[in-house]
Length: 219
Image (cartoon, rainbow, N blue to C red):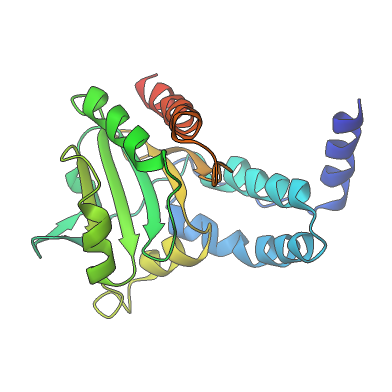
């Protein structure tokens, strides 16, 4: 009852985020129309340490604005230096936006590798990194060959609006679940609090979280 009441109060206090007018609207355009209000409200929540409200705001943005939009196509680089576009991937995409300054917990990458190695025939697993290429190279060595590691050169993409949106709108690390038709099915924050705990528990918690995403993409 308490949670239901809190949800009702939050809904009543938060101005409704604008609904998508077309199912095939671009992710970048939908975010651009709604991100200012979301940032204002979420900053207030974090200032008062109201993490439940902050999560509610994030979920509202995803459900009412992001889900059902089409992910923009954009060019990024593989570590070979070759440019590719996101739409090159033809399978459903499990995309994690990450940054070189994020510190993965002990079971995070091993669990993702295990999931990718078991499901790569049906799903493209992609990690999109921001940050220094040197640091990303070190992290890349820890990932399975079945995980596509891409990175953003922001000097190269300085005028690319979708790159700025991906970096600044939803935070790091964040998982995007994208259908083979390039429709965003869901977006979820990767915020499992498994730091400082033993490996097995961390691995299992991350594995279950990743499997939930795989199940969504396989539907």
